[in-house]
Amino acid sequence: MKVLSSAPQCHDRSKTLALLTAFPTETVWGLGAPPSEEGWQALIQAKGRDPQQAFQVSCASPELALSWALHPEVLRPLTTFWPGPLTLVVQAQAGLPEYLAPGGWVGLRVPAHPAAQALLRESGGRLLTSSLNLSGQPVARSEAEARTLGLAGRFIAEGSQPPSGEASTVLRVSEAGWGVLRAGALPLDAVRAQLRGTALNELPLD
Image (cartoon, rainbow, N blue to C red):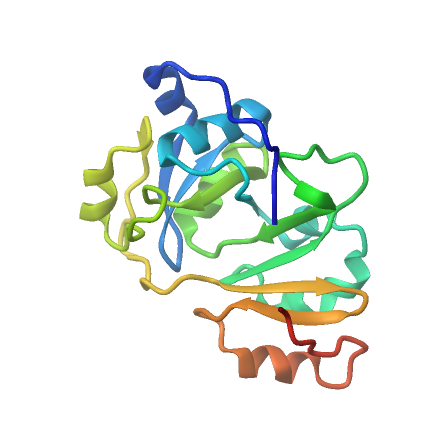
């Protein structure tokens, strides 16, 4: 997916850090920002990321995630895996800005980790999120690695539930069917079993 072509304007580092939160998920460590253009810019600056690359939107509940999808009924069979390690890239509701839904597509995730859920609830239900790493570098898979990176002004400890270290499974889903963008923590056999007998057929993706 592609996003806004123009590079974000420079942020003062302290302002950037103040917008960002490092938090654990059930998969790997995440970096979150408000779902605003300012939050998008902060994520790009902190990670050193190409603004052409999209971020996902993490939501506190399946209902919040589905409300940003153009065809929520198509996704309902997959909500059995939410909260959990599944990201769905879907056609977005009209009116979402380009930084949230580049090209009319939005990535949606409902994490299961209790610390991530608490953060999302206190943040209004949604955050613009990414893995916690510098662009092109390995993602933080432990609390020690996450703290060492120092990419966020706020840090939420993992408590008694460390991330598994395996990234979420990412699917692209539309009325035409579904395809695998990234294999991950949710087994694809479980997805295929869940969708067997539905109108969603598996499609090869280029």
